[in-house]
Every structure is written in C-alpha cells, then in structure tokens.
Length: 177
Image (tube, rainbow, N blue to C red):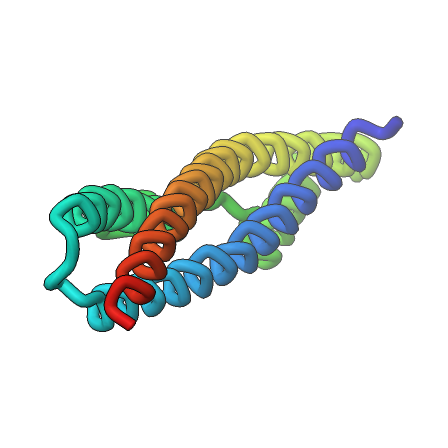
C-alpha cells in the first residue's frame, strides 16, 4: 500500500465522519423536543388534588426527568461546540495556492531540475500535513462521538422517567374520571 494514499484516505475518512456526526445531532434534538412537550402535557393536565403518594412520585420522577433532560441537552451542545464559546478546532490541508507555492519553491531550490526530489519532498510534506490533520480531526471526532453517546444515554434516562410519569398520569387520570 502506498503511504501517501493511506494518509490521504485516513484524512478524508475523518472529514466524512465529522459530517456524519454533525448530521446525527438532529435525532437527539428532535426526541428531546418531543419528550419535553409530553412532559409539559402531563404536568399541565395532572390533577394535583390526588393521593399524596402519587404527588410525591410525580415530583421525584419529574426532578429526575429534568436533570437527565438537561444533561442530555448539555451533551448535545457540547457535541456541537467544544466549549460554549467556540467549536471544535478541525485541521485542514493548506490552501491549494500554498501547496503550489511550496512546490515552486522546491523546484527553484533544486536548480538541477531533479524532479524526482521535488516530487518526493512535496509528497513528504503533504503526508505530514495529512497525518497532522488526521490526528487532530480524530481527536475532535472522538470527543464529539463521546458527547453524542452521553446525550443519547441521558435521553434514554429521560424516556424511562417519562414512562414512570406517564404511569402516574394514567393512574391519576382514572382516579379522577
């Protein structure tokens, strides 16, 4: 396998992964929106003149639901923004003009017109650029994947607590009808 092709493919795979990660953020956002809407529906339509145990259970599960939802939202935000002030610092190849200028400087450096040396040095420089950018982008993608995983994990907790709230809501509904 050609080492140049290896680093070039790795670089572009990390950029593709970045795009896939960014596209996957919309699912947790949509599910969180649906869950929040359902949660407020339950709170608004709950008959608060109910048995004390139901009311305490609703409060406890609501607190747990809110905490897990806030943590899910926090991790969704962190998956898109590394900190709350800036995004992830992905590294890209230099602009084509800079690569072309470097190539021309190499040609003038090797005045004996040894194009094999020019090609070899330029390829080596590009390999180091691909390798450096791939490492940086892999680190960024790993952090984003971790935060999306955590967001989905807390989204699952939110769903579990919302199911318990639904059960309490149904019991409350049938006691008052």
